[in-house]
Image 1 (cartoon, helix red, strand yellow):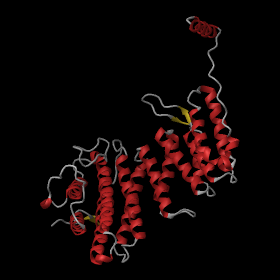
Image 2 (cartoon, rainbow, N blue to C red):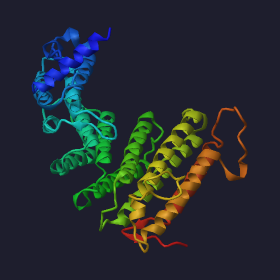
Image 3 (cartoon, rainbow, N blue to C red):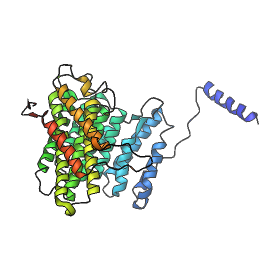
Image 4 (cartoon, rainbow, N blue to C red):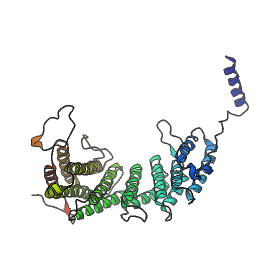
Length: 412
């Protein structure tokens, strides 16, 4: 029984002394031709997973050669209009997941850099179907998560910002789907963390927040605000603007300078105020319609979700932390402000009002609060009328710290 281990030690030593080393067992080549057969479409996702796992034990020149061959095969499948859409989508996803090096303890994986220009070209190609574009965008975002070469950074930032800022929905894409594109692009900006050359990322995201806030302000004048279509649009618009605000909090401001702090503060205040105004208007219309209004419980829940989505994102955008944290993050927008920056006073007023509103949403009216009973399902401790009053109060307070034509509103 002991002879077998000794035998293999002798073999290994002989190989090293001869100037060689044990070879890695050859990998079974992925049968990409079978992917093109429509009857195999359901098995392609598993095949792609196996293909990516096969790279784990391959390094050096062998890995690079296999990466070149694999990317070429995936490109061919993506470009073939006769292949079923699900397979083409899985192929573009796989291209975005190719790695030059596997993750190690304490280190991220290294994305296959040669795939990034291809993903960008596919995403920007006017004839790429929307589902292929989205798969390419997911791959681009994966590269930002793994880390991209600095020479590529500005180009990728421009691509992501162009997507986030594009209000015009492309042909063949619904408004809801385009919102997925834009939110995914924000994920890429979050991963890069930079404020961008000439603070481009900061200024563009603030502009997006302002445009979405303007659209929500216009909605307050819509007599049909309680339709299901309007509800959905309000939710998507609030989520997009809120995620843009949250992304501002994901950036690193430690080396940034000459940022227009007042404009960013304006964007945070305006968004918070208009979300309160819209949701207050929806609540008021429901109260006025009485029995003819949508389900009050469902409406109350959706309003709370929209408001919480907004205020939590705004707090993160300002502090890079949750509201409950003792101090803002060291790389946050708030921490970057100079002690004499007038924006600090306005941001403190906004955070104070958000804290009060958040407490109301969790605990109800201060005068009616009581300790929650054990093992009792948690319910909202307020109705639509009380919620409308809380949102009105928040909006009116924030109006005092807003600026009109860049002139601060005087406080009484």
